[in-house]
Image (cartoon, rainbow, N blue to C red; front, top):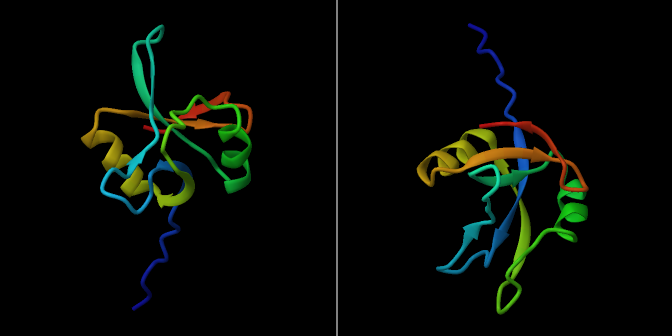
Length: 98
């Protein structure tokens, strides 16, 4: 019996304080649009470029870009009432993922 191969979709996200008890995915609130969202990227390079222009709380925080499978990302977003927006390297929204 042939088992179908399911291709997983991976995204890149920014993690604040990775590997610590205060680890969390970076998310934002857009008060004009009245939404909270987590930015996601198709490639690590896009995430790195966008990270340079993203607002961040730098005081005593470390940031890393991590790959995450789509199902885990959606689960975390749902658990924390966040939407997920796929961004380009300049921070423009390409599409809403979740």
